[in-house]
Image: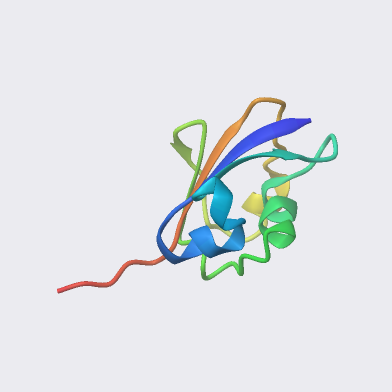
Length: 84
């Protein structure tokens, strides 16, 4: 199945430069959100906020493993931000 993935800020480095932080990825059927993060080598603490189809995915323990992605889903991953 294909899902669209958008990575922001320093997470963009997890994808090839040519795609500029956005890619359509082929994933196995029944792939969950945690498996996607593992595939992209994004540690749990690096994925501060994750939106699936515009809805924020909970960071509660086990939630990312239970969120099964579907064909055509749009996943946006944001790192922690700091500022002043």
